[in-house]
Length: 476
Image 1 (cartoon, rainbow, N blue to C red):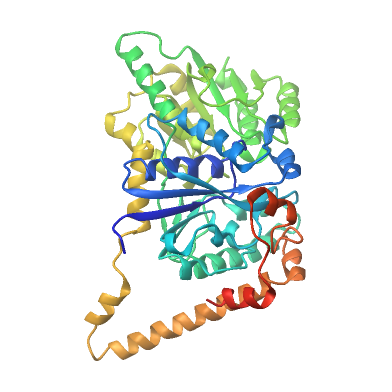
Image 2 (image 1 turned 60 degrees about the vertical axis):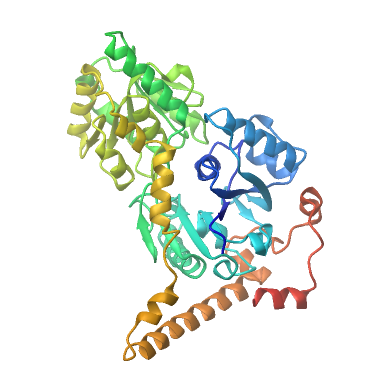
């Protein structure tokens, strides 16, 4: 095998949908390819025009994959100080209104030619594989790395019969990640514990925020007023993102917090309810439509308050720290990575929240060191990813050969047994995912075993193989 590695980064969303699985895999692909020593392909979902209208904001739609690729490339090029050299490919997908998610259609492993199949990075491997019916990832790719972005169990528990659904989903997530991935990276301890997993934050911060942080540091060193505004919170405007907890805390301790004024910025399904709730409480809370966190409007705030406990790793908290702000957040596994930074103030109860808020408003942030800034960067995140993914882990064969003659037969029998059990598990999953009635019963979009005519036309895909040939291919 050539020393030059090829990374295929599969993700579950794409710009202009401003969600974590659109943005972070895009930065990961750019920084993996930055030094030119690796070939990198980013694979993102292609939606029909009808689905685009449901998903993408501000009525932004694309007539062709090439047009969307241009949009994605312009977005990333405006945010990094180098010219990204990765490739972009699209796989067919459909939007599920019920799940509010984009789901793959057909066998997306086919997007990478067999001769280029080396390392697959599955951003949200459980999401990509719930309904996967096609080539076995670990057979096609030399190494398959899954990166867990979302705490799906926390979301489904809020639904009707949530505990039962969460129990089933926990098993499904364990099942598909075990049989399709060699290694799992969990961004924080807030995610489901999975086989062969390690907890490591492999995400970084948009370099534009680092520029703001350096400007603020220079202003502080020159004795200038770097932060002229008080407190704010930015995030998707749904109750589950901590808005209820924040409004309750501000209302409960209104007298102690004095004339504290908090600005809330975001867009989402609960925007109107949150605005009305803030108005009814007579709090000094201003609710604004969502903006990009890099907008100059946010540069002069000193305190970022984030009470959310449903995130896996809160990107906006990292961005606020990079801009030199004080961040106040709950003691929760999703915030574990931020505890190393002096401007992160963790609260365990209401009293600590009030005290941290008052102190933050009265103090100046501690300037970040060069090493702390580096730890928040995508360069550092890429180094952490390469280490956690164990890309260069030696194969099992040399270790087997070194085993003693006494233990070798037992070891070999155990390995064969595990392999047989995994093969049987894969066969069962493929059988269930290949039945339309089973797929629909478990939430798949109907008729997504193969791309429809429109998706084939958009992506220039050939007609599907005959059933007999397809069955033979899946067994390889």
